[in-house]
Image (cartoon, rainbow, N blue to C red):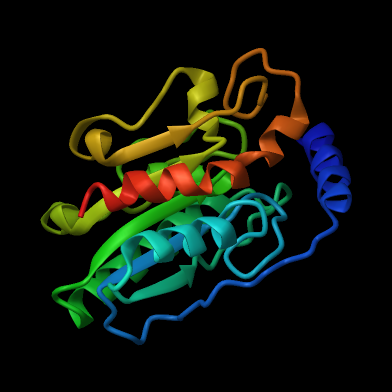
Length: 214
């Protein structure tokens, strides 16, 4: 399935034209009101992610004005050929949240993950993606004392859904998990690979959900 998906993703991105409108992104410096770490999908171009991260960041920014926002591109390979890709993203996301929380005591977070990046977020919340497409075991979790500062979690094309898992427990009520009909990455038996490229259309709805948690 991985090779087929890789080919479909390449075709889909070519069809989309790759007209990337980059969203502002910050490494870890500013103490903004809200930080938006984004774990992009496999091979996904763009500043925070052409398909999901960039449009979702812009939509969240629009919804949360006049609050100040910063974005963070989770540092990980997002590669099908890297066996520890998800674990590297898991580690980086948790380290980023911990560092930001320590540096900026009033800052809150909106976590965003797409495709393989959703696995990164799942693991960071303590929900294992092991056994899912491009998943892996948990190597780090956001400390319990920081959980109240995670305002919302936005997931798109989340591979754990195809194996019957979802975000439960502490973060369940703060999580919106999108799976387009026919998307084989998040829907068992799905066969429409182009559905996996459709999540930019959910940006406004996702941003409204996030805003409702503030």
